[in-house]
Amino acid sequence: MKFRASQRIPCFTYNGRFSHTHAQRFHFTTFLRKVQATEARASLNRGGSSSNSSSQGNTLLLPGATVATIVMLGLLHARRLYDDQKIEDAREKGILEFQPDVKATFMRLLPLRSISRFWGTLTSVELPMWLRPSVYKGWARAFHSNLEEVALPLEEYASLREFFVRRLKEGTRPIDPDPCCLISPVDGTVLQFGELKEVGAMIEQVKGFSYSVSSLLGASSLLPMSVVDDNTNQDGGQEGSMDDTNQKSWWRVSLASPKVRDPAPARPMKGLFYCVIYLSPGDYHRIHSPADWNVFGRRHFSGRLFPMNERATRTIRNLYVENERVVLEGKWQEGFMAMAAVGATNIGSIELFIEPTLRTNRPWKKLLHPEPPEEQVYEPRGTGVLLKKGDELAAFNMGSTVVLVFQAPILQPSADKSSSAEFSFCIKKGDRVHMGEALGRWHDP
Image (cartoon, rainbow, N blue to C red):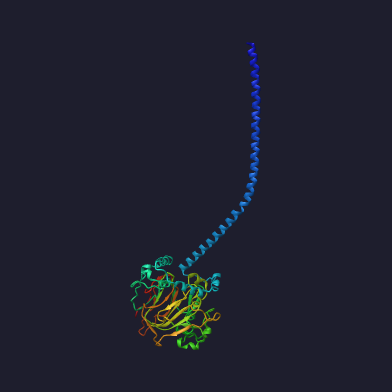
């Protein structure tokens, strides 16, 4: 019994020592593992932090450049929105100002006449029958044309040019029957209108810049003007005549700086009015007679072909005077009447139905010096061509601007101390008008 007990004690002691040693070794090994793991993590963290710092140093440059670009684009976009808002507010208030820019100067360097001739050739190409409806519908969607007014099926317009000068369905544009009204000759937007009163007979292009009616119509115009005498400050009744061309030298008119240098300042006769109407590319492009009148002659100015949109109006000087145009002059029941069809980029071709042989946008014979306008007096002299209100007169191949200059009744005391009728416009600036609608009215006394 004692032997067994004595043997159990060493065994117990031996086992205790082994367990203690094993536990120490286990704890030491665990400690080493922890230290190694800590060192590894530390080295890993040091390497990672260094790599991260280097990567951060590299990546901070890219976001910085990107942010700068985004900020710059945002500022430019905000500036554009601000400018657009200013233009919109100015348009509502009617105070658009003339502001020349670099783009307007660049436009003078482009061969716009050649580009317009190429465009005319391109639009005259006959399209396949199956393609025509898709092309014309796409054009109508882009420029807001009303295809329900088109007189013929779309397949019958062989080219874009034929579609541009399309006729409308009968009754689509009713003519105002009032004999005491002047109708709009075109579909478009009213840009300017009013009475010419000041010396020089100036029409405002935009606020800050105007052009003279004499420069628009030509030096030999029939425009009723009175010479202003500086000494007596009284008006004389001198009027121009189309037969006096030889007495007026065309060197007075310069397309580069189109100002008619009259020997004496002139003031328009009382009752002289004007109206400027812009035709967009999607509008009806035919021009009609605004009243019953006799067209005595035609004057063709072979000028430039700048665009005629709102931006060009605000940035290009003498836009209406420098561009190619066809001027018709004559007489109606109230006196003088003139109509100027002003061309634009891609619209160098202006068709005149009363003179089919007229060709516009021809190559210039002189590059440095402007050519004098080409004139044609219609027979019989003094009578010319009789047009009725609403008759087709001309057509643009895309869209541009028409300027009307005319005499109309004004208030004048009569013998019985009563007043005669006075012409007044029934439109506002920015109005959309259709051909046949009244621009202004007066009443017989």
